Structures are given as C-alpha cells and as structure tokens.
Length: 251
Image (tube, rainbow, N blue to C red; front, side):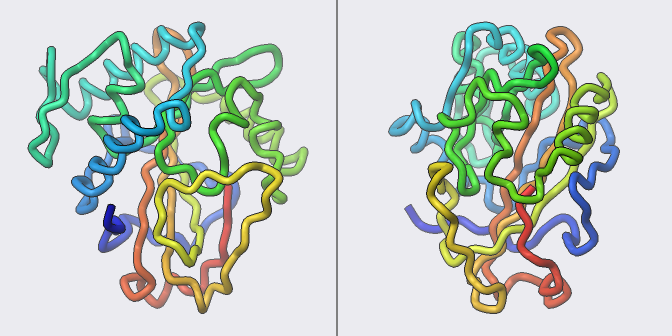
C-alpha cells in the first residue's frame, strides 16, 4: 500500500509539556482529515489480515467497548442504525457484537479502554492500528506504570500525575494533548517489542514528522476512561520551518 500523509497539522507542537493536558470542547475529539481515505484503507487491511495484532478486548471491558461505539456513532454518524457511509463512500455495517472492530472501520482514531483495578488503570481493550514503536500485546491487561516502562521521562512523579489525571477526568469534560516524533520511515503500523531499542534519526535528517493527537474522556455508564489517538504523518518538506525547534518527544 502507498504511504499515507496529511498535508498539515491542526496545531503547532512546539510549546508542550508532559503530560501537557488541555481542556477540549465536548464533541471535538474525532477528526476527519485529508488522509481519511488512505488511513481507512490501511485500517481495513490491518483488521482483515492482522486482527490479533491490532485488537484486544477483555470480556470485562465489553460493556465499555459497546458504550464507546455508541458514543462515536452519535458524534460521527448521528442517526446511523445498521450501517454508516464513510466520507470516502464506503458502506460499513454496524456490528455491535464486534464494537472495536466496527470502530476500527468508521473513524481514523485508535482507541484504548482503561479501567480502574486496585490503585491503577489497566488497559482492558484497544483497537490500535497505528502504534508508534510499541506492541499492543505487551501492554494488554497491564497498568499505566507498566505500559510506560520504556519511556525514559515517565518517572515516579509523572506516573503519579498521570494516575491523578485518569482518576480525575470527569464525564462531559474531555481533555487532549499531543506528541511529536521524527522518523525516517513513513510506516504507520510500526509495532516494536519492548526490548528492541528504537533507532532515532537525527532531526535534521528525518524524513517524516509523526504526531499523535490524544484525547482522554470518561464514559458515563461504564465509567471507563477512553484514550483516543489520531495519528498525523507529514513529509519533512510539508512541516513548517517553525516546527524544527521541537525535539523528538514520546509521551
């Protein structure tokens, strides 16, 4: 499949702090951009060919996954009952017995479902087509601290702040943040086992800027926290020069 790129970012990523959380208007968490058709074709392919790699769901999280599907339908396809027509023209049946599989095929976002178990939130379900150098199978049913083990900046202080954030997110008060990553490959589906180091290109030699717009919200019925990821990928020549001051950062 051909590489898929956006032509621009909807934000300037220079001024950021980890976790860099900002309030977000209700209903603005899902984006549809100029890479929709290409990304959705890739998502369709990954779900068909690598389902076990991109989708996990513990049965305890099924009610939350069903609630998430309904929420996305209401925001992105209001009034849809049995099928949706995507912006690229594809007709996708709504299979409520496969909520994450259906989500994979109707919006560009990846989704992680996190539920409180003991003192931490645990990843109990996800559709993740575009991992940025991590592997879903290694994170499934793991708490936040284990999920972030490879991130050097994720120290005990950051872990406490992020857990407080997940504890404190309120229904109807979503939040968002973003990161910036530089790569020398345009591959969107790039899983990497935890023990394999990532080779980071020098920023002035990197060919692509990758940024994840990450939204955090709480579902009202299940009370699960949802972490959504919209992946942007720009060719270096399409990145505004002012972005060059931004260092590579994974959060």
